[in-house]
Image 1: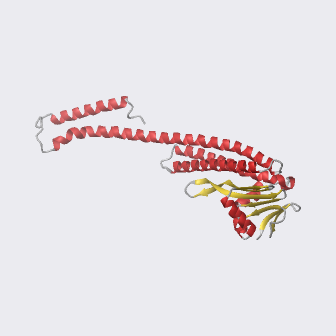
Image 2: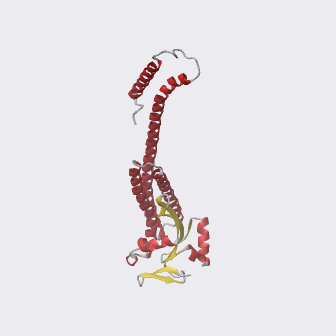
Length: 300
């Protein structure tokens, strides 16, 4: 099993055949399945999100990622990352390959200037911040869709807005899940261990990020509901105007149609019947149009 191992003496990432020595290891689930110890860790993490005993701590935390969808464009996706820290000098991270690449490139920088004890806190904070970063991207995308919705003639933008609102809701749920895991981990960790202050700082930051993302979610959910109301009102207005115009067209038809039937009608043979009927229909239609206009039936 070849894993990514950070060598502090060299200051670079290397490949390692074993993860038993102290250090930082990045392992994919496929690689972990080939090792008995890590396979048991994966199985244990699927059943239980948290394990604490003395200095050892195992966490399975949700991480927010961005991906491109063929139908909805940029959307959010929640993956999971497993962190095992059994001593201040050994840290194992198990996640999918693209998340490990992000960890290696963006999250874990300047390892030469940071102690190993700070690395767990950095990873926990970046897991929490990933939800805020993804939420910020979704908010920018929502603003673009709101502007496009004003001139849209289809439901594509509205479907994308609903998908992004759903993703924001999932981010809020994932952040709350992180808070519950960190709270349970803090309760299960003795106060004199080196892990306790790291978990305490991460929990405080999680609460702050949860408030921020939850506020954004509630705000844009309210905006989306308002836009839905505007669209429904516009649809009702269009139907109202169409109904009035249909009623105007039905008035001449209702008066003229009986004279096309093979039925005896009064004034049927009157010389000026046709002109009188046209004048009567025109007058009734005009009166109905004036009445509808005064009450705003023609206002879009």
